[in-house]
Image 1 (tube, rainbow, N blue to C red):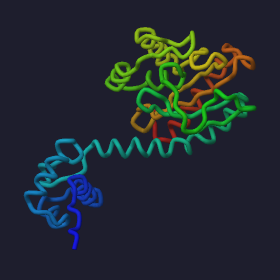
Image 2 (cartoon, rainbow, N blue to C red; image 1 turned 120 degrees about the vertical axis):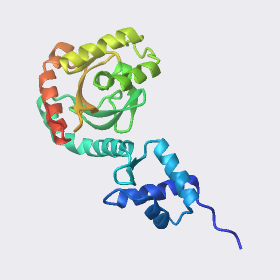
Image 3 (cartoon, one colour; image 1 turned 90 degrees about the vertical axis):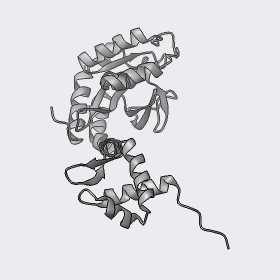
Image 4 (cartoon, one colour; image 1 turned 90 degrees about the horizontal axis):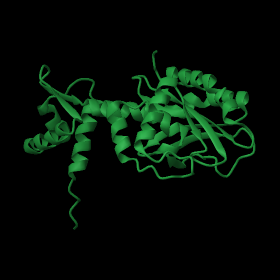
Length: 255
């Protein structure tokens, strides 16, 4: 008869996290041992691993363990991403009606922006983003504005990871010029892509912030060069930034 597979370190860690997550208060070591059905040595090892990664925290005053702030941060970010399309839906529809341009919602994924919702203002163009597609962050208005509103550490990491491939002749291809774009975007509250992602596309984007004031994503308006010029698209920037502010407030952001 085959032996049942032994529990992996990962499964044991998950078991402890489940115990702490389901508890309404910090949990003592002895209770973790009983609930997890671990040997004390195993429980010590698992708790040490989780604490080292800041996934759990030992509360000296309570003499017990609780979930770490890293888990709270993960949950918060996941919740924002999950709720973001729903929170933005009505505002996107209104922007579509007002501007008659493409309206897109995106989030940062590494050195790219990923599009989580896109609605067309008229007959779709082959270069327009669809849900799930990704574009390099350095050449998109959305990528620029998200980068501009990142905290200093996250922004520095992103800048170090970017390679700045030239997508068109207008694409920013170096870190110094990109940093200047980020400062401009942060100051004015929106970013611009002037034929940098595709020669036939202009776009502007503004940030959506979460309940802690962190950038959760970006809302952008796109227009083909044959249908709208950049100056006219920029007239919609105040409308776009106000729409993003209303979405941000739905996510708990307080001015």
